[in-house]
Image (cartoon, rainbow, N blue to C red; front, side, top):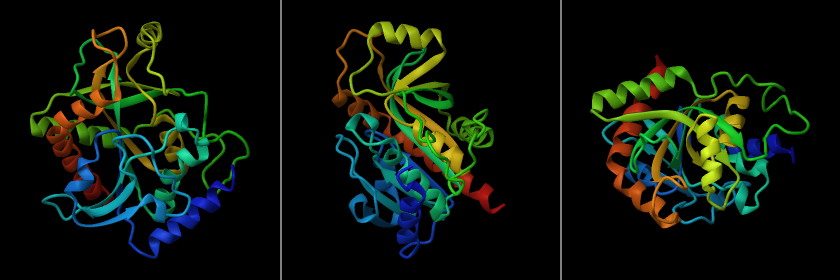
Length: 280
């Protein structure tokens, strides 16, 4: 485990000495960092200052932790703008280090977001998808090897990896805002090459609604640690073989920007409700 608990505990202690932990945090995927920019009375900490936080090298990932109030609300959250990926060469413990740090800092609820390719034929670029479950096809698992009981129990139950109560809040917020919210299973793959059309056909057969190169290991580590998890994908492109255009990362950022206002509205409303539940 590469002393994963000690590293996360040191990072959490470093944060605790500077800021009280909010009850909720959001991990912001490619092109979705606008939420952090909207936080009020914000304090911004570059990842490089937090112990063992690796800086992301992928375009669209700023690499900062922002703590502040949701716009128009009293609710404080932590927003992680960007993440590191397995395909960058990072070991899996480092990919999930931020999630474990959040738990030890004192966070209770975690919203994981990502940019994803749409597999469900009903999806179009710009849709938001509530993640109902996932397929871990990365070939990695953050719990592999010796289990440190301080991080969580040996065999965590993943029957409800994505918390049903938090999901219900997101559905209700979307309805109140008049937004169409898709739902589906997220397939997490290693990358960095995009999937082939044959791989997309396979993923569709096994029930995936969207595919991406993040999230699944973070969710496993979060559930292992006892965090409540909710997931939202921004469908930024049609997966390979379902559209006529070549896939490229710039398109991911462009479509995420177009979905910005709907994403901000939904996430702000949902995280405010999460916090209200935490204090009820």
